Image (tube, rainbow over the protein chains, first blue to last red):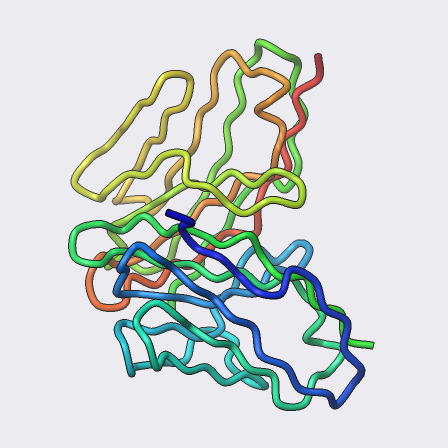
Length: 113
Length: 113
């Protein structure tokens, strides 16, 4: 049982390049989330999904897209990366129902030059 | 949306002393308040949580108190140890729908041996 995993762990992009971050969970959780973490700003919600095939915007969705084609995977896409997207990205999931604990992945450190 | 404020941003204590971190929230509908600990370069991990039908919860050296009327909640760590040194985040959410978490900006706790 690996929990929540993220791929890749590190990435450096040039401005304007695109990339996809993959989040996978093997706990059969319904809800999944993408956050970004910047110094002094805590974690901010980018997009989330309450089930397979559904996605919704969070606090800071601009410049990102997501997809949840399979229940266990939640993809975060950057179509045209900007230096302002340099951050550490965390994925999280919860079981749903009465269970609220969010389980976080190990994070992806992204640098956009 | 919900706004969570957290104080102080940094806190240094002598080993064995107590540490207190305070948070306020804005949305009276929030009813779930977790606390996460994040060590350097690691993922956030849940250390304790409290629901709005409870005023206090304790787990060994860690306790959380909630004042719904004043919309604030606090983390108390007693008999601090060097391994308690980390960044601590409070969060708030509504335990229905998407269960989105709104995080405070974090407190860097340093326990001096």
